[in-house]
Length: 307
Image 1 (cartoon, rainbow, N blue to C red):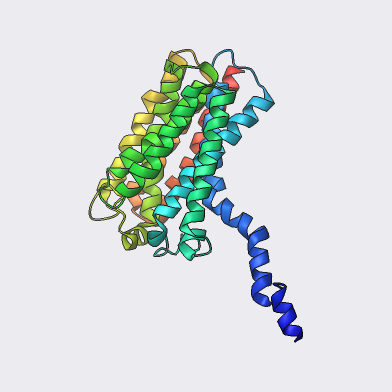
Image 2 (cartoon, helix red, strand yellow; image 1 turned 90 degrees about the vertical axis):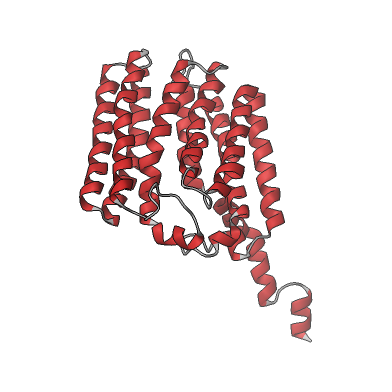
């Protein structure tokens, strides 16, 4: 009888588990859908690009709005990715515990969360900044979730396609501050666009076995991690060198940031050359972590020079 009353009020082991899931556990699931660490990195470049617009002043409230709006749109794209790839995620150790892949969250709930966050994020960008920024954010979400995501199983060209939404945050931030797509925004877009290739191929190198199991085709060579892949990382990191001069050339920044960006570009080239020489996951991991360091150093150097 006691157990019957216990169950009736939802206080059995299962009921307690569900309550926990509706509380802190569910919040953690939503955070996993958003992928906070990845989303923060993406939105960071958008906020810095916004601050690099001439005549844009430091306004904490507007920076917060841009950050929140960007996080919501980026989180929506990540959530759609996890809903669409739930079966694929379940096959890989790295992603098997994601909420939709593991069955902790339904597909319908995942879609609902993605639609709500995406719409709210676009509204914030459009209402508090301009609808050009909101439109670019929506276009980026569409490219990432509905073009890049399914293309990963078809062809390695997915990396090229995915580099566009990956670099669009720079244009979104610039548009939010300037109301138009000027040269400065396109230069920042080019830097982040090229940076993604050694960055992502290093990740694909390290995760090659998992990606192969899932049917993803993300390395430039069909034979997996090869010298050809390593050469491609070198080529794209070399392209960063002339593009890195452009902020100085268009007078977006000064001599100090030019030197810092040049050193950062040489650093990336050195990591990629080391990958070619060693051809190991450890060398690929150095490229990956090097790329994580590269982007904030470059963007913050440009911003500091503007100050």
